[in-house]
Amino acid sequence: MTRRLRFNGTGSGVNGCPSVHEDLDTGEFIVHGPALTDPDDIAQLRHLNEGEVPIVVPRELLVDFGPKEVVRVPHIIGLDEFDRLFTQFEHTAWRLETRRRYASDELTDTYVQFMRGEPVDWEGVDTEWCAERREQVALGKRFERVRVVDDPPTAGQLYLLDNARRNSFVGEKILNLWRADADRLGLPTEDFWLFDSRLVARLDFDDADNLAGVELITEPAAVLRYAMVRDAALHHAVPYEEFAARLTAKED
Image 1 (cartoon, rainbow, N blue to C red):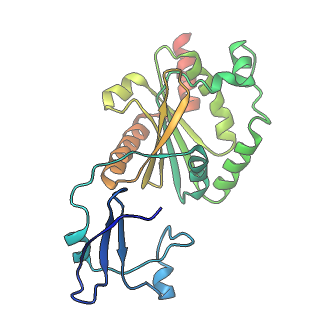
Image 2 (cartoon, rainbow, N blue to C red):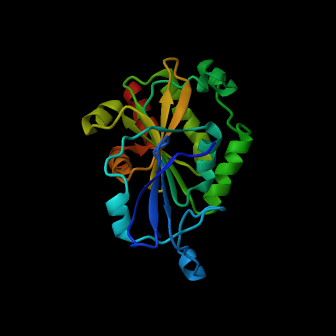
Image 3 (tube, one colour):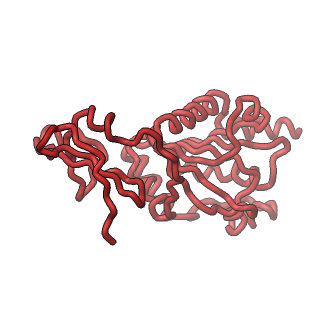
């Protein structure tokens, strides 16, 4: 389908390059200008994908003819794209878990074992997921989670406290935080992954606690707010082993 493009303007006088056009249907902006061709310059670019062409435009062009007010449309991604985030990030992947139950956990054999009061054998569980985690950790990447826990903990939260052993085996760092402390800190009651402190994957759940969608957030100001949540949670959370020991002592 042919785009309906509107010429917004050019900052280069009469030769018409570089210029800015706007797609009247999607709201996307198209900028054209001289290509960046120096290999040393291109080598400095991050996240330049195959098929993308870097171009050079004067700052004034974007100021004069770029969007002045943007109505944010949620960027919903599919689960395949969400999965790719766990291999494409460069440094850190951090998760906040705030829910009292996750329906997907309750479909597993390990959950059935746990609810029967049997010792859970995590060896050989989710072998593909575990192999991918180990591979990424071996590359020097870091995975961390802070899990919020109610007082008293729900069955699902206790299951995840046991599950932390499996996550630790593959290189993840798992910490826990009482919900009262999370509320005192003003942490959001939503689940999300923060990748490299530059993008957020916010997880949306339905009323039955099933994962219903993933929203990708890249606006710097919004990402900064999630990074502040991470910093506060990490400062007050404790390693899961210590948390489990405190919980046992409290019950005794």
